[in-house]
Amino acid sequence: MKRMSGTDAFLLGIETPRCYMHTLKIAIIDPTNDPDGWSFARYRQQVTNRLHLIPAFRLKYVPSPLGLGHPLWVEDADFNLDYHLRRVACPAPGDQRALCQFMSDVYAYQLDRSRPLWMSWVVEGLENGRVALVTMVHHAYFDGVGASYAMRQYFSQEPGYEPSAPAQAWKGEKPPSWFKALLLGARDLPGVIVQHVPKLISGIKKVRALEKRYEEEGKPKPPAPGMMPKTPINLALSHGRSFFCDTIPLQQMQTTRRALGVTLNDLYLSCCAGAARRLLRDLDYNPDNGPLVAGIPISGSRPEGMQGEGNFATVDYTWLHVEIEDPLDRLRASRRSAQEMKEHMEAARGADITSLVQLSPPWLTKLIRWRINAQQGKFGLFGNILLSNVPGPREPLYLGNAIVENWFSTGQIFDGTGINMTLWSYCNNANLCVLGDSAVLPDAWVLFNYFCQELQALEALAQEQIEEANASVPVSAGSNS
Image (cartoon, rainbow, N blue to C red; front, side):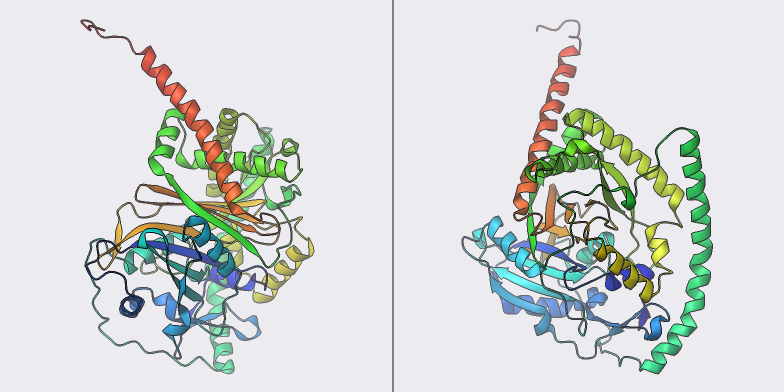
């Protein structure tokens, strides 16, 4: 039994029957090199043998009485693997579009809080004999960095490896009684206050000092959710979701960003802005009205022993320059905004959203949830659009003798923040996932395609600069050319 952090508890408390707080983790398995081929029964046994490597998957939510302290995680004594593991066939023709349509449907399914908060669909029938392992897991378990670590534990870095059984057989625990949970909450609450209040006070002072310096220098205030313009992509959520993911060669992005003298994240933000600009025009909204506010998850330091559990990321905000039509000008503006966000994030440590929710009791989280919902999309805690860029494993992983050919991951959308774009790298792939409310974005492939068009435009400009640089290199003495 363990106490949740404030961030974990917030991600549970902010959830509604339309605002789902789970993520998708998708492994594409190629069993071609496995001498035994693919077998669901064998995979089920592999899951059984590996569950101890992801301890969070046996944890069940237990609320804290009267809101005294954050909720608890308890080892589920009634754990049933067959409930969490499902076997399905991908609709014909088994291509990427068909798989993404299946994932759009399963995403719009709220997890049962009386059980551990995850489900996994084994999707067979993909093209070329591939199998997709589509796992829906609540964000309260871990953030993107924690998920990446858990992935490395579950799979292996060499083919044929099978993990050893745990030294001690696992068994669940009985949830605490209402009275015991109340006493535990009363015992733990003072420690939470003592640990986080000084950080919060210090962070608020630093943020005020930064804002004062901005004012003295004539700079505008850093973006915040209250500054977000009302656009057609910002609504109260419906029940439905639209999801699409596919691969962009990572080297293509790296070559482009080096030639243009920016970071991969600068390039990503600029392409997202260009894609959003195109989408807003489709929705009869003039993007020239001004920039959007984008929420950006940022990884934080993780305590020793908690690499694969808990949420230690925070969120800050940057301007998303949909108002700039020229791709190169937009890229430069995106770079400046990203640098300003980093400065603000450093100054705001201790007063960022993660620090604030550490002290947020359940009733306050419910009040925040009600207030956001009442705004009907005019305000989103994570801005107009949520953008995430997570580095994944650089080397291929294996499940037994089968290779993990690819890996995709996406987060969530929120009331008022109707689109999430997540870039997750794996080996030499940059894997882009687009998740939207189906009332806002009926076909997520459209936004994915717009992103690719923006990347191609910057790639062409980068190639021009490379050719100009090569042409300006003087021919060395004695050359026959």
